Length: 526
Image (cartoon, rainbow, N blue to C red; front, top):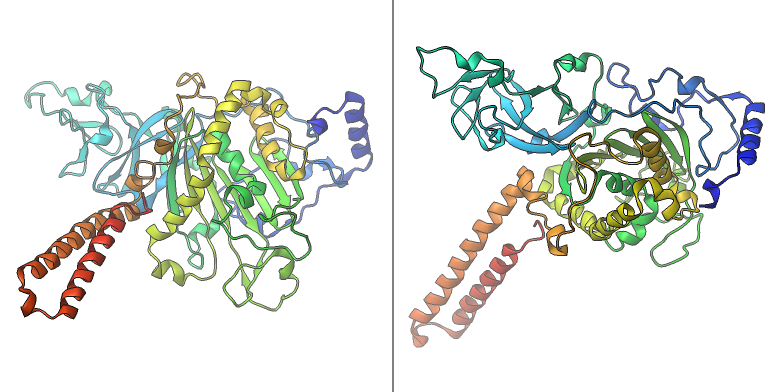
């Protein structure tokens, strides 16, 4: 990449020029997006010793593809196992059963402790014979019970009952070896989060550091429908793909309808166009990005969200282009956010939780079933899923550290992708640090049909889609029974006893019921 291969003298000259024009970095919010994390007691993006807001830099436009001129500590590394990770939306967790999840190679079990009225996250491993506790049950006293031998644990991970231990014998259940590792966890923005280290020193970590907070997700004036899906490619590719707006009109052509700008001519059928994107600031706690329609923020390891500028209501239910905002300032203002939570599961696997909170058309969520919106969301993911899976394997062939040499990114539309890869290289060696869990190599690619499977990647983990899938299966059987019954009526009735019109009507109804049953047997939900 030409812009990434600047000579050292040129870089020094650029830095000298910036230093000679020392102007304080603007303190005022750059957009409504800058207010998203304005809750001071919840989360602060940049908290390093050298505050971004006090850094003296040039106000002259800097090419986002040029080397970053900020001074940083080369020894500062991102600790992947001392972070908050989202596990699942609360709406998709059944309080009656435990749920198994994997994050950063850690197998954990999420379950509802009705005694403490709180969600708990344990190591998904019984200390007895290492059976997965996620396959267990909640007993009549509200304890987590291992399904293998019946050992029971309370909300702190302490073993409270071993059926095989004699009541009059020594209290072996009080041994530390009988306890399950418990992770700090909390519910925020309707999502269960857990701290990825069960060491006792992090027991009260919530008092020192909280998960990223997005006020709109707790605001009753905003919709907050969430979706989750397991993805068959890694965290790095998932995150950079969500940061890439230029791929949308092509990879999702015919699925997503994008507003057209009045100020730019359309170069092709899909509507691709130059994008002005710049990186405002970067440190170990993430980066800010700015483009003509709004702002973006990356809060590692998981959260990336975008806030377009305030949207003017055109009165026809459609989203206007950015240029139309100036044309109708008197109209009611609409606002929508795009929130993505990218979760590293293991090499070549990740999980995505997404939600698009908006402060308009809230009635839609009350009328349209949640599972119907998931059908469309999964269709969008499917449209570029295979090519991203292949892309990841090609990147691994050249090596993550050689990503920028192998890929040619000459335009500003790739600025956020370059920034993410630069952040990843600077603070984590170019990829997720799996510790001793994995060596980073990818699993063999499965067949394409398996990659596009929705049932195991989404339906089983979604309460709405799971219920809809079961309902459609029941409907299929009912329609087939009705179809057979109608045909039997026609067959059992004498031809002279039934009018021809009535006969044709019954036969037509039977055919329609059978056709409807076949449609319900293969819905787009899976």
